[in-house]
Image (tube, rainbow, N blue to C red; front, side, top):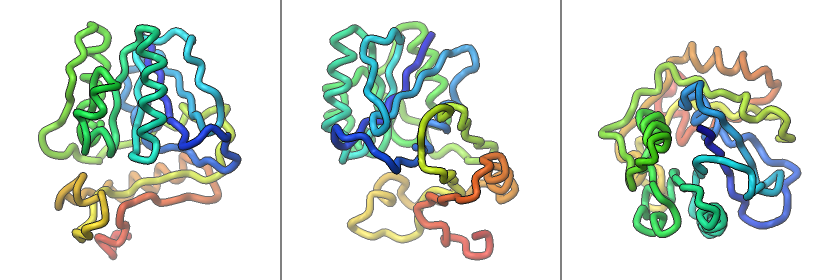
Length: 214
């Protein structure tokens, strides 16, 4: 079983300052060890459509949705099933399902291993959604998925998810509702040490939800 992760680009031009997309390191850490994994970031490289794989998985934002759908069409024409997750498929699953065989609604934690197992059996469901929100304890992204790729020398680190505010223009509240979760501080510190970078980028929706912990 082989899963190919793809990060679509907004446009055709390659990026010279792209940063590691943390979501794929999280997905890699949730993937069973007996599953072969490939990862292609279109910001850095062309997508090898004819490379053999059993499943293509994409995290899709609204600004990459059009390109993600084009990529999906290429793989589906080759008989490869597609699963999409992220903000855009969560908010518009029916639209995404016009181009994908399955969508993950909400976070991948608690759901992704089931997606992989169903793909192994060729029994993908159209929608996957966990009831409630999985805890973030024990979350340790597997950055080995980025080896050999020329990203900016900055480690993307996430401490918590969600925000206490309900700004009408923001997608965070629409995605997480009023749910707020933080990882144990010691685990975040351990991840920073493991990342081995001089510079880190804390990607939280609002790190100051809990000021003393921040």
